[in-house]
Length: 198
Length: 160
Image 1 (cartoon, rainbow over the protein chains, first blue to last red):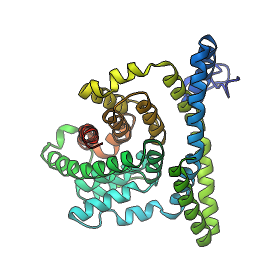
Image 2 (cartoon, one colour):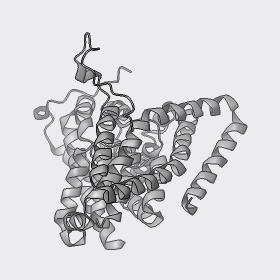
Image 3 (tube, rainbow over the protein chains, first blue to last red):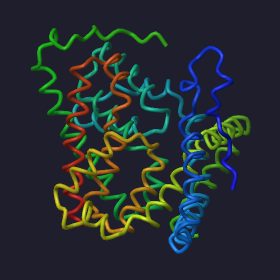
Image 4 (cartoon, rainbow over the protein chains, first blue to last red):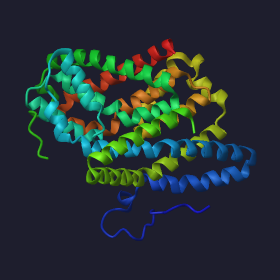
């Protein structure tokens, strides 16, 4: 078996250091495939098990991943970030918390795009607890992710974890807000939340 | 194909059909985004598949159930939670990994802790979060997330 693409070559790195050009995922794959093949040849019985297990996981991925990705793509075109921002900060009390979580659960991008949105919200005077709920939901409750969880860990596991996570995020954010307000601002070297430049 | 996969695929097909009826252009754009994301994820997906194969093929289930199984109790949960906070694996791939751990004898508690910290506590995102929202916010949010993840894990173990 040939490793896919090896971009570890030291020669073709004129300006940036070579390790910065490395894509960790391809590199790891290029390293692990020869290792797997060698080890499997040394221990044939275990190698067979490795191949069986990898194959069955590959099949499971093939069954579910296209659907998950298509759903993400559809969300990306139908629910824009502007829509999320428009509804964020609306509602108060439990309703506000829930709304923040639901908006956070929409798959609208990686976590780091949510941070400037959170900063902007604080700047606009949104409740700390709501912003925390929004970011936490963004990080760990995503609609397409839940599909993967159901597929691999089952309905019961996924539903229980989702319910627990949502309720704990709610409680946690209220506590976190209390502590946030008690901690002195100066010592943390925090800049005033400003409007994001993006 | 499992019934779950069939249900999920039919639902997504339905959503796709509905989207096509509403706007062809937007749907095509969405499919393009999905295609691009697939290309980006491909190496990580293959990597996870090979790692799971190696892991289940070579690491003995008795070792995993010793470290992360029911008998390991809270220590196993703590190990899983720390692993989940430090590792950086795309969330979508966390679930097959969790499933492989469970297959080889890890307890529900440990798997829940692993998945929850993996998604909720992002060590590699901390610098960005500090920059945007300040140290105070970041430390409190990540600290509380870690604690919440452990509570979630323990409750999962008790319920399921």
